[in-house]
Length: 495
Image (tube, rainbow, N blue to C red; front, side):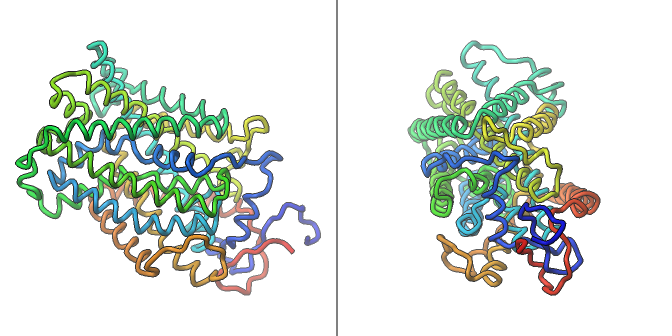
């Protein structure tokens, strides 16, 4: 150790004096994640099955139960192509996440990958976008949960919560209390421990897969070819816009990498879980979309918040089936809130560990081995948009923020392949470098389809993040300045 520095493994920068270009080596990120946090670290309690269930829990929810109707409105019967296009984007990017997740198994996910490959400022902006993806997506999912709670109440007792307390101002209400309640319930479960929350997520994931398979079986009994004609009446523009919305249904697979510090044998289990989840969810979504439109037609499904319940009610001529679907949606969407909030807290933990945000986010409870304060701060902050925002606004902004982080991850794969060829990679993506390049192309294509208003909102969001890094993160980064000789700004541990 150098004189005067504490024995804390603090890295020192061997790059230029520009703070935004300094970075950490993969070895440093892994070493730091393995150390104690406030004397009490995270526990590795999740196996492959639990990790797959966690991934399914993070992915399958509002996007298919609520967002399907909006996607059909854009693409018509060609929504099936929109889902496939979104899936292709995810597959190429999933390869990148699988490779980096096996090489750098830390809770920082995309943020940590960018820190190792692209530098501190870019990493902070990626983390900033991840706050948008995980955090705002919690709000969007909670809004969808509220809609299905009302659908379930209507099916069971013929009564719904008044709009004043079950919808935000943009949807004709005052405050969305059910959305706040589901966030509070998820936070309560998360602070109890990873083992407990992982068990609950696994049970809910199995249940919602069963519910969606039952939906497909019912809807296909009323399938008519004529309902798919005209197939692409909305044109290529409609398919592209639909794919951008459909992409929201896949958001969450990247959250698997945020469990890197709590998974047994992460170098093996993370890439396997990612690929299983993408394949399973793609098949499930395609079947649900095709059966729903084939049963009633695109017009009947468009602009219906609880479209799946509607399909089952009309096909079976009974409200019982729709009630079962609504119950499945309530469970499914609750599991998404749980899984996504988990991912959000782990991203913030990694950023706090690097000094880029306040230290309160890295503190782990010695009793539950979970970031308790972090979890409740996240719950309180994102309960606000859940209570007052409408779903369509947050969906578009979340989609473009997620796509931006995925562009960074695809680029990071290429950079680390060239800069760190010796890095242990238990999974190497096929068709390199074609896969990451196509991942970038498809992500940019879907970003284009979100519309100029969303781009403007995203630009303002990025500008705010850059300002925050300049005023706070850059000055408090735990990288210690030292004479620079390496233009890349590599960071190495203290000798």
